[in-house]
Image (cartoon, rainbow, N blue to C red):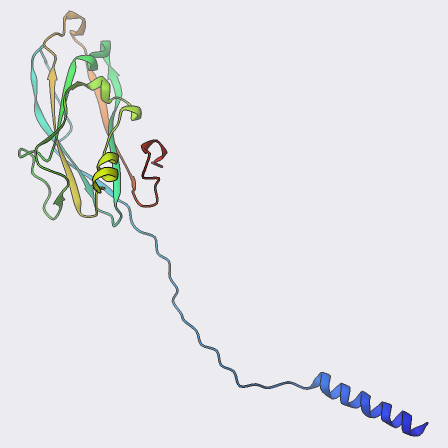
Length: 204
């Protein structure tokens, strides 16, 4: 009986040592620090000679040309769109204001330090009514250039446009003493990670 009891005590003692003991192995820990995630910058800058300020217009008058420059001053490829928001449009005079838009015209000087976007003297619109440019649904954009030609507006590039406006010679007395006041709106958004197959899915 004593031997059995002694054996039991020895087993319990060994078990207690096993539970309380710390096992040691050779080991080492290394680290890689400074895992950093920084977002890009996105910045659209406008330049040029706008706004227009034409008064006393008569049918057939041509307003002096104005220039607008869209600069990508961020570090992401971008697409952009331009449209006009009407503030005042008496008698829908926008139907008689004819707009011509030319990309990279010789008459407009781009800002220094920027690369020209697209070919020179490219007529994009030729005597279309200003009405056809009103609202975001009628925006002029560079989606097709980005999609088909690989021409988003890259960082440090600028797109320069000459805008010509003519008061339609067919305007009658309905449009006397009428005024149009509008705001040119330019929206820009990143090109990468967009659905590049359908402009209607672009997130602006």
